Length: 363
Image (cartoon, rainbow, N blue to C red; front, side):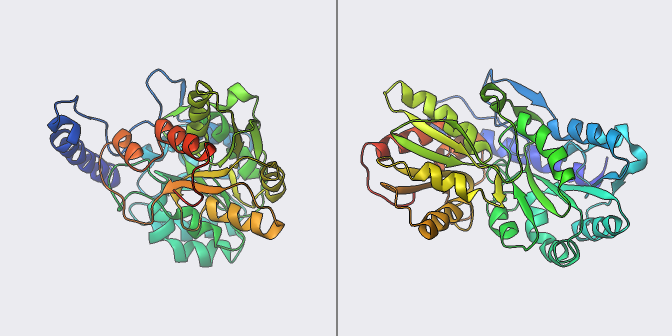
């Protein structure tokens, strides 16, 4: 067993046991939460999913482009890169538990004309290897694609594995494209789009059994473009990543209460589609709500707020749904999503309160 896989599995077993023994619901006589903290699915029960969309999309890309390489820091299975490794073992590079080496080597291979897709967890890329990415990839404008699992609150392991600030860090890096896809349908399209972009790019990765949502809306990903998925007069939600799925779920819930919500999906955080955001926010009489699986500091919410301020657009109210400026708790994901207000039910409750004329400000 690879060291990283062994480390992840040992910790997952400990955390799952801890959750079963200590979940508040169990103490109250409710069913115990046994969701794995590390690789729990964000899909609801019965929701359509697709397995490992990134791994399969990268294999398809590699069949067309011999320059494509797969690289990881001992986390091939946990970033779905093992699928690429099985298909192209001669183009797969396992760098061990050495994220700085991973990105330094990726930069060197890119300088020789290859196109490395380097995977790890988002916390390790954004924190442990930040300077190596900044200096050897971004500053040199190397054609490295950084694909990172466990973005935001998609792990229950606590602050060591929860990448709550990765968008803020990568947004601040010159030359870096930043992408936060919603579902499997979009991930499959993002992979070839990243390859067409000449330069460094960072993508948040949803791995394993990934929900399918956007195919129902006839959606096509375009780098740097936001898309209005549905319109409504009562509130505008501007969202990225899995929070677009939550916003759409919340909109369906709110329709029962005769609250009609518009959802503008913004998968590319940088470069930001300011024109689409301004156009959607100019419609009067509805609050603007930014929903993101990221701290409210430095992510999509603040980027949208700055865009509207520069454009002179003043919506009826402005709100943020996101993770707090705090170190987050460990536990089962359903419990944590409720606790931090990013479950569909919590999102719906917040939108309804604000669309009914609640006070402005961040959640």
